Image (cartoon, rainbow over all chains, first blue to last red; front, side, top):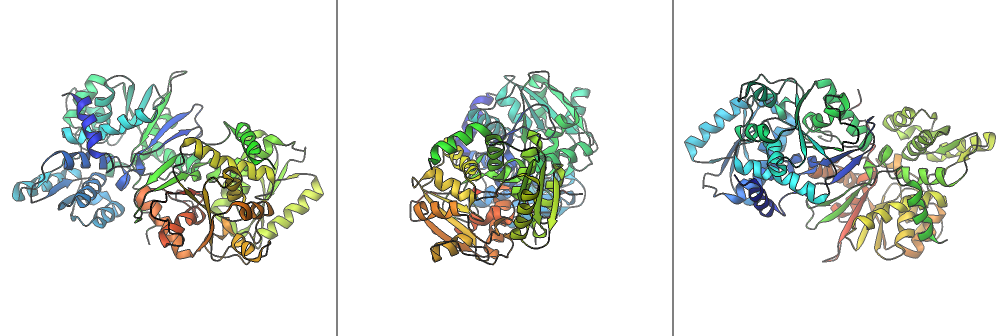
Length: 307
Length: 307
């Protein structure tokens, strides 16, 4: 696939529908070096997922039956938001583990919502049944070319804003965001995948040499808890990934606190996972190596201002 | 005073000691027009106050006895942080109304801290007694030229980043931040002062034609609750201020929620006060008038990640 063309087209398509999220040079958080952050949690619905959702809805025909998506929460909120803005019906299936804040966020868009016992894979099964029954268009959370190309606009935008780094650290769940980044960068910069020890589908697949099912748990599981890595991501990772590292929940909590204390950025565990690799030392830059971190989601629970 | 030269000098002095805070174009929050935000709550210690503190400490001799400051919280945290970074002792006097989060923030810098019953004016009295007794250098929270010049670097930086607005809305407590903005802009753009109805020292002074004492209360009082406007601010406001508007606590709460829901920015009431003027309609832009809002502080209580 000509990913550069796909991502250029996606960027043109979603322009005006998504937020051009700001950068922050972080010289704090106890690190002896500076880190450039892209604050993608400021995106509509609080995560990068709005990029892939708008790219899919604007680039492909939407049937009368509307849209269906299964989601740990952030993808569902993004699809529901994009559908609402573009005048389509949407039905979102989320696992209970998505949590009250994300469920309320989806509900606020006016989308139909089914909360499913269990984890993401259970929600995906029901979404597939719904698709088969109604003819609604399924938008996969990470393993579809239009989703990956949409997420790839994040790195494209970052480079246009002045990405100042040799190495970019990105948290991985199902792999849509990092796939978009790898597709856009195509080896021009080093990309480091960061996963929770307890939700590490990419790490497991790289070790096994093929997609493999993993158990998912931990504080970031409602955003990063994919049981199996996307095949688009795995192919791109095998071609271009610089490194794959793991962090534990304590490291993620520490990074969340560091982002709040240093910069008053309150993010969900998944949003702090990439930074956790630097603070914990799971990834140690070489002397002089400039690093950047993609802060990918802010839908913390409970909503800190919920009444 | 040649404010442009003072602010240029301040910017050179504090370069590397303060955060170049990012901008965000806000196309949400229920407003029918776009608003450019400067996210100054990402500054060190969570507010613009670090600018004035570093400018004063780097531009003036500091005695052996160190520094003393009275503060509703944010200024004290900034002075304590700057003193710690530059190797000076500091003693901070805060009123109880500063709240636990701000008091903990000051304590975390290692500064000596005295919590004073009552409001800001009580803390100021004790700080002045301490200054007279010890010879420590007093850093006024808003009514000193070095403080105002330091805060003025915020607008200088914003213009360098591409301030895209005819009109800038700024929250006012004692008036240090807006004084710096008025001093820098000198009438080149319209500046709108926004104060809580229950803490409106500038509005009262403009009405009376001279500084006048006001009662202070309400949810933003621990940051904006100055009983009397600074004389530097009042002089600059009489020369250059475009408009003075008031908002109530409900409007401030609504703006806080809007910043979280639209952009995952969690700010203290004072930090949302300027935006509240737009959302509530206390300030209504003319058709085609481009507006910008300075988000000035993020030290919300309780600390959302405190354990």
